Image (cartoon, rainbow, N blue to C red):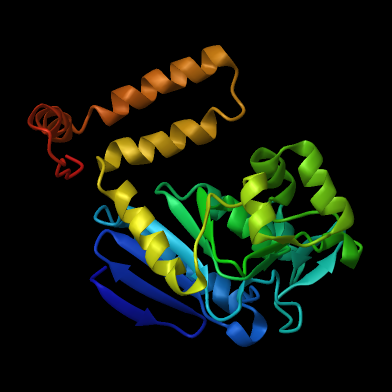
Amino acid sequence: MADGTQVLEHILWERRGQVGVLTLNKPDRLNALSQAMRDEVTGVLEAAHADDDLRCLVLTGAGRGFCSGADLQAGAAVMAEGGIARKNQNERIDGMGWVGRWASMWAHFDKPVIGAINGVAAGAGLSTALACDVRIGSEHARFKSVFIERNLSPDSGLSFFLPRVVGYAAAADMIFTSRAVGAEEALRLGLLNRVVAADQLVDAAVAYAEEMAGWPPLALRMSKRVLQHNQDAGLDEALRYETLGLEFSRRARNDVQESQAAFREKRKGVYTGS
């Protein structure tokens, strides 16, 4: 993936050095998730996963919305049977439907993902924002569950991600009332890590990503894996998994030596993942 911007029908993909910026680009639909958009995003993520030179990813939306959820008007999904969105019965073969596979894809992407939340994140769009490792929002950021308004219980991983980010009671409040949470409250709840001005949002997210990308890449990816795994682990299992993570990170022997030299010489390290 070379530096520059790739314009697809439903998304934009921009490479800025070791950081990728993926923009959902259907502003007239508040970046609602159509099947065509999901297919384009999946292709980009597969390429990003295989690109060892890419170390972090920023996800944002074009226009005034981050993502309004499933694009029902376009016929991309039909809500039925317990809130599972699908076009046909084959969408449910794995027991989770496209919304589940979408959430799983983001959660299992092995490099840090920074959500740059520029506007409303609703329904599956809220879940997508929560699947990011960290989130920066503008003053226009707004989070809304929506599901209960449509006679649905949560899907797309919302019941998993939201209570882990804000706690059970705050998650229940958002889901059971479907109220909108603005940027300042989102910062207090932990839905956002930082709030910046709208015209600085993507640049701030890229700068945040570059800060992460400057560290040893193998250790960075393993840190994400350990953190995710140990959310649901007991202490003994967590400690064993940390040990495995350390062993894996130390396979990058050149980076181990570089980190030691950078510490001794009081300079910023230059890491290759080798």
